[in-house]
Length: 270
Image (cartoon, rainbow, N blue to C red):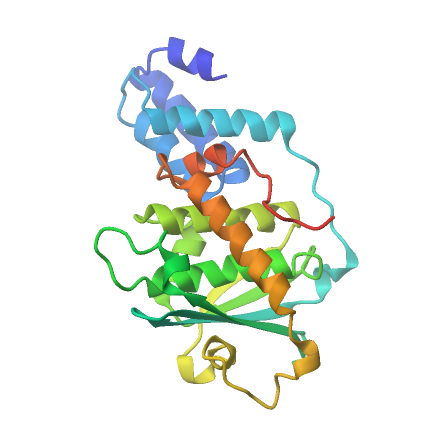
């Protein structure tokens, strides 16, 4: 498919005829991120193809040929709520916390983790001493990794108290290569486990995950519902490994997934 696209000139008539097909195909297969590269080439009437467009076409081809069928379960009618948060200290490190709540309002599970600043070197680039937006996005991906089995085919309301992180997860990419890689990781789990997300912002004062992200106790967060520290650390290490592979040298969602080896999760449990 990529070869055929490279051989055919993008004349105005061909471009307009392909516009509707590109919108439908890219939205169904690649999501909102994929449509950007398709449209930029089709509507500009250019014969040459950019590297990002070729990446998009290759991903489209792989998804069509190798994509697995969707599997839906009875959990489709049982929504869950995910609250996430990150706290930051530019000198000491960052706190990560998440709480999974049932549709009836009961806390099902939660986790907390403190990460030393040296373990966050991937995010402290370009002279930036704070990367709270990246950590806020990271904890969402970690939560999807940890609870993916519980979330299979589940409508999931994800509440974040960082507007930038929320928008990046909705779009599936960011101007930051690191956040784009994290979004690719989140998309991997959403796709593999057929999770149906809705991202929304919650005020910090109403965010239950503020407590575990600061390593604070709360009466609703029972210790027997806490995810073991070793499991949370494994999710963090798996996330960082994925991000390192995905964010260099590509900076797009498509490139991030392709660089990381497609839609394979780093440490998913069978």
